Length: 155
Image 1 (spheres, helix red, strand yellow):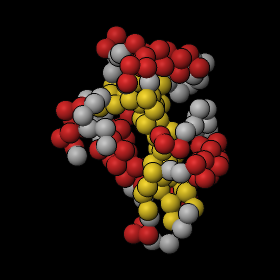
Image 2 (cartoon, one colour):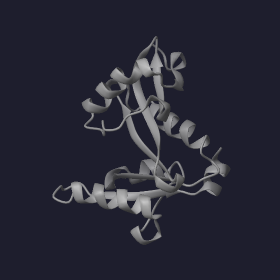
Image 3 (cartoon, rainbow, N blue to C red):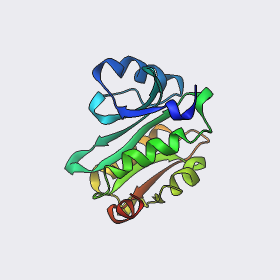
Image 4 (cartoon, rainbow, N blue to C red):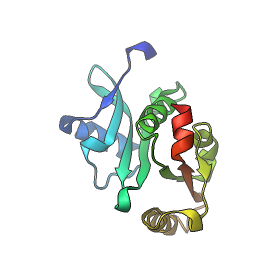
């Protein structure tokens, strides 16, 4: 299979089993999944990459659940998923939470580290929940933001 065969599309209800399995295989968030939130990468109906935009309280947007199956990594699929989903949100800010070692990946897409005090309340609450969940871990979680103006310039 070639990279040119990859189809990027919105997920359907029937994709949710594959999406859930993919997220579970990479220890991703499998809670409260809705097909309308997802963009997938697939060939012939087999999904090997996904990302979603979650809407938080007050309409804030969070990029979440980016996952690419191990055998498909390092081929630009994760970058393509992020670029495609962010381009649809270019008029508003998009937030995300990631491990410290993933910062450079998201920075290439225009995201920057955000301090807790600059986050809207819904995003700050989500940040505190996630950071508390990983408090005992060696991996540190950071909040990042892509502002609407930067997203518009990247599109």
